[in-house]
Amino acid sequence: MVRDQRVDMRELLPQERRELLETTVVGLFRAALLMAEDDDFPLDRGFFDLGLTSLRLSELKGAIEAEFGCEIDTAVLFSRPTTEQLINYLADEVWTV
Image (tube, rainbow, N blue to C red; front, top):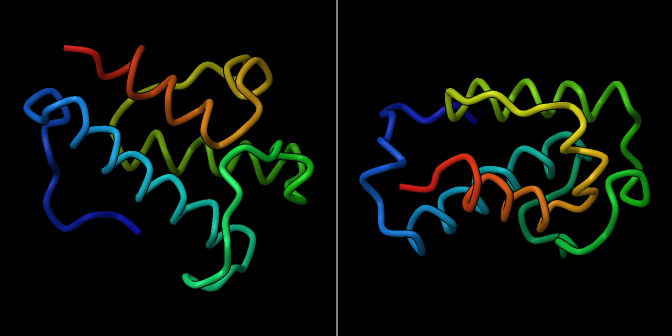
């Protein structure tokens, strides 16, 4: 799900940045879990409760880093163990203006 055109996240308003992060990150998680777009995706469910393994989560981390050109410390995945918490971390701590 690599976007054709890179968006400078710093140029987006906070709400726009969060929406882009959520759409992209959830899309990556859906693909990893072989979910259809119309399947309900629980943002508040833990990564391992969703059925991800440590290896798959590490691959997703790499995909998110590649997609947004940022680095995510592996410890973040364990201290913020839901998709919602990860998105909030990216929006609030990685891409703050």
